[in-house]
Amino acid sequence: MNKNTALKTIKEAAFETLGCTEPAAIGLCVATAKKHLSDDIEKIILTLDKNVLKNSSAVGIYGTDKKGIKFAVALSLLKKPDKGLSIFDNTEKQDILKAEKFLSEKQIEVNNKKDISHLFIKAELFTKKEKAVCIIEKSHSNICLIQVNDQKIFEKKILKQKTTKPNKIEDISIKDLIDIIEEINDHEIEYLKDYVNINLKAADLAKKLKSPMALSIEKLFSETSTSLTSIIYSIKNTATLASLARMTGEKVPIIGCTGSGNHGITFFISIGQCYKLLPFEKKKSLEKALAFGLLTLVYIKSNTGLLTPMCGCSVAAAAASAAAIAYLLGLNQDQILASINFVLANLSGLICDGAKSSCALKISTSVMIAIESALLAKENQKICGEGITANSLKDTLKNLSKLHEMGMEKMDETILDIFSKKTCL
Image 1: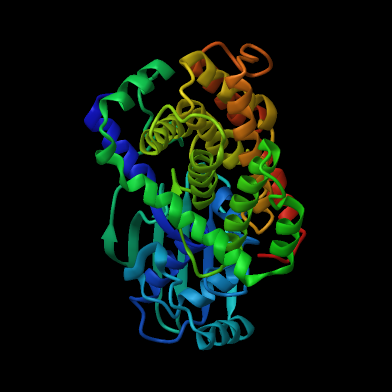
Image 2 (image 1 turned 90 degrees about the vertical axis):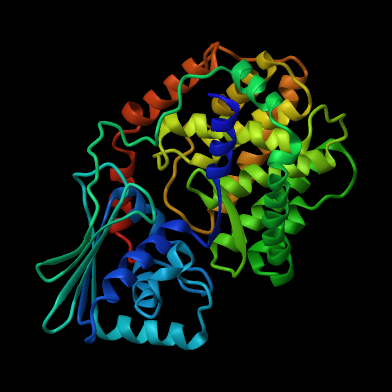
């Protein structure tokens, strides 16, 4: 990887998102199909891959106090698809009432497409005389088919791949990552600092709203002194509140990364607040620490995949955050690897049981472990070679990937079976 490729990768890894991404992708798919129909919708059939189904079932819908797939579908009928994944922006009270009315009068069927391993959303909308279909595949806004009755309005061929992982970057060592980042000037990545502030605003909003959960988190984890423990708890508190605001549908933008808003909260807040609050000399700039962490995160996700049975905030975003904090403090490549291994030894196995408000608690854990792992590495502690960890980043990630693909092969299926006994869809 050269400098220009690195800059492009860093730029593409982060993005702004409004609310949880999977319901927004469903909304985009439904609204796109609806655009091609003029009569009233009588019935909707939605077919989703296991991960989109899992991550849409119980999460708050942006700009509302509602949750779940069917409400997202009903609300999207009132929206314009040209807003993309920001489709639920500017939702008014009357929109919510209209969506609820549709739900009470019309049929929405939600199915799981079990024979597919990548992201897949298919919306079939029926009027009394017509049918419109839209399909999104591979990524959240990648529309591949628009069809009205038997006429294809738009079609994009999807290349068949053996892997569901994003484009895999070449095997790279921590030394290689350090060398690449050192070639980059701070002004070329200065925009990354703004991402920290954007995500911090979500935590500020949660504090102002004073929901029962937010008040309890503040009370439990509030900073009471300048001790290192209190600083760490203050940082995890901030990240927890930011995620809570996002996952309950509050109107606040988030900078996500590698396909996830919660990854972005974990990543940008932990590193940004460590730069500001940790009582240690910072040997690197905030910009370079964020850039180093983003490249590390992209490398991790290229091994594990974008959506996984394990919580990505723990095994990916937290691991990359720990590496970035270690880099920020001027630690060497062995210590940076140790920080990643500490995270994975601690958090591997933390499952993803769908997007929902309690994801904020997993982010709380992930942020705390990321900081503690970097500080343990600073003390020259390491666990390389224990459990799934190895003596190189490449081998550690190879083991993590194997754990995802083979060790937890039936995890999503089991979680969805549990979901099927509930009424949250």
